[in-house]
Amino acid sequence: MDYSSGLGAEPGSGYVDSEQRGAPRYTSLIRSAKLVCGQGEFLCVVRDVSSTGISIRAFHNLPTDPTLALELQNGESFEIKQVRSNGLEGSYRFDRPVVVERLVHETWNYPKRQLRLNIMIPLTISTLTQKANAVTLNISQQGARIECDSVFALDQTVRVEGPGFPETQAKVRWRRDSNYGLVFENTFSLREFALMAAAVQCPSMLEPQ
Image 1 (cartoon, rainbow, N blue to C red):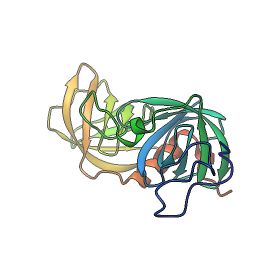
Image 2: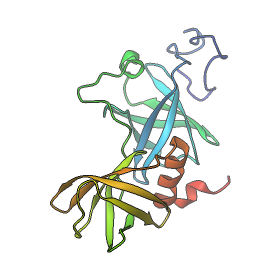
Image 3: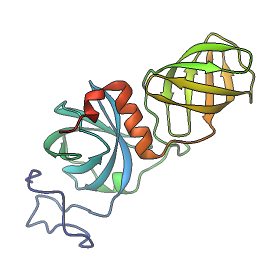
């Protein structure tokens, strides 16, 4: 299958004839996922998929690592290698053929949740009476798990801010030793979340090509 020749069939065609591709490609799949590599963890949207590869679109420049892991919302991970990139779009080949239905119809062994990025962002957590340093352990569009030595009460509202992280209000949902679970009052859009993650991990990804 020549994965360098394009991003798929014309809209509405459903898939590409197997005589044109080594494997039929489904073009109606639009699903958020994350790319994991040496440069960090980054959000993307899977545009179409076949048993041998995928095409994706990012919200910023693509990672330059030739080999990455594609992780779905259900936690399944697939090793992929870049075949072609063009601006925000890229084509990748799986290291081994996959069952397309596993990607089209994700199986869930755990409750469905939004994508979480395992990245560390230094933060300042503030209330009317105190201010403390913290760091994220993971973060999603809706909230974050942080580590902080200061004590905050359950359901307490705090202000969260940090380098590359826009100031937002959050509520403390759980506490376990020095770990806290925060829920943001204003959730990130997928695009906002993707750009913020790139800014704090690899700012060069935001530079014009």
